[in-house]
Image (cartoon, rainbow, N blue to C red):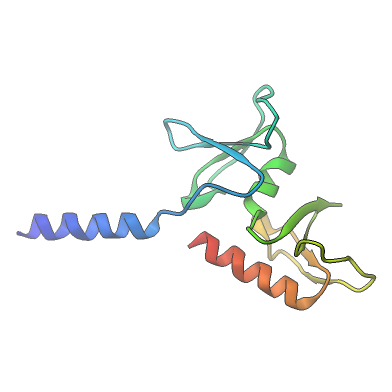
Length: 135
């Protein structure tokens, strides 16, 4: 009886802890060891690429052709346009203009990148969506 209860508890925990590896704008291939190869659509694997250890969903290792692709994959959230500019993650809602004033949070993004948005509300909405996606 105890073994049965332990198995049910383990299965429930495993189901709750699993997160999706799909991200908008990326093609993801899962390798046998759980590593995720991340590519942009219409690109092919180039050489060894870069490795971001334990950075992905469920602490999986991410491999990508370059660091920018890996970081943008980690930062991608449905409903937001995400770019990497001057070493910072820039986020905006579709069609949202960038003004002179911006809101930023140091080390708030994946891999401790600074996140910048056109306004504080957009930044808060993005960070909440990013956190929800990680659960």
